[in-house]
Image (cartoon, rainbow, N blue to C red; front, side, top):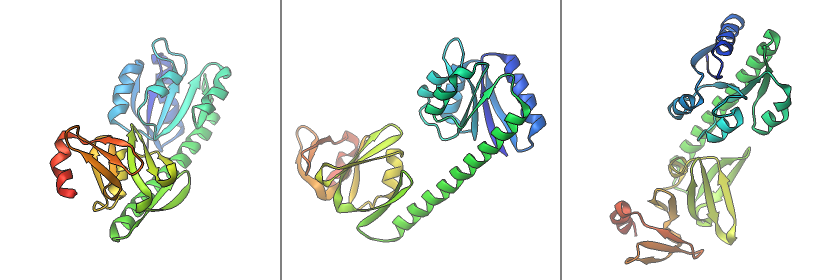
Length: 244
């Protein structure tokens, strides 16, 4: 069963869409609906639906502004509006579909089919990520496997100097001033790294222990081979000293 969230400032529009979904598909249920987008943002911080039906024109926060405020979007987004002028902008915000109000039942059926395909791809991607994590953990080796942009990268751990967090993204800084941006949180990256090579020295950084050039004790930071200065979190200092 696909789980949907609806955000629309018009309660009648929400009621109409709930009715349409319940009458034209047995494979989708509305887990929550909101006429206040701020309440919806709070809800989506702790809940992950399969799809979001989002109105574009809302008085406090517009639909596209709403998407920009979301910390993580790993569900299908469907834009709903009475105006067709937003179609191109919807595509730019990676919405999988665009429904004009009043919503046509045939258009809704096609939209639900797209949501199913999107959901199936996500499930398969998660299974694949789990397989890679298991594969990396099974062997004491100096290569790790990373899935990014539809490609499998096989990286030598000696090529990785450090990893920096940027919210829902992480950047791997490599030798020769190269870098790779991943759509993963730092804790997810940490899970696939061999712990005897890497150490999470700070909430925002993981370092390769073999790439430390110096540790400045008084000021509490390390200097990496790339000359990057990285702070040592106070609560991690004793564990770090044991590692080195």
